Amino acid sequence: ASMAPSSVDKDGSKKVAIAKAGAIPPLVQMLRAGEPGVQKQAARALHNLTSKSKENKALVAEAGAVPPLVALLKAGAPAAREQVVGVLRNLTGGSAENKAALAASGALDPLVGLLKVCESPEAQVNLAVVLYNLAND
Image 1 (spheres, rainbow, N blue to C red):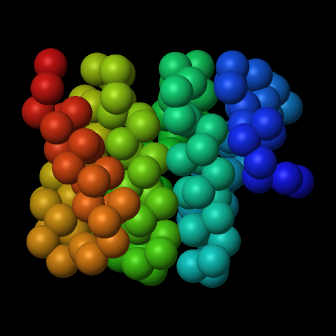
Image 2 (tube, rainbow, N blue to C red):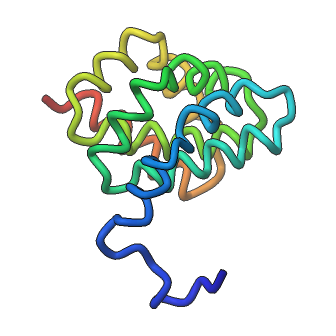
């Protein structure tokens, strides 16, 4: 598929259609896969699907994504962790329920720990936004 600007999902309809087709639960299950490449791509897909989609954020949380996301945050491959941070950024944006679930999951220490060692500028930005979201009412 072309990555040209005309292919961008401007109204979010593609993201909603993918979620309605049932993609979110298997993607969440793939976060638990033993293969780092599978984990990274599953997190990447969830990162995209939750971007600017309140409905998909709720579906990802309801599918039980927080525990495997936090597990990857703690012990995943660096490339997977970068995508996980993007998902967590999206999940914590504008959702008190998701913020509470993430805070209760023990994610704060690994988030701060990763902030100290992360070298990817994109991941650093996403980490800062997750922490901002968690601190903001």
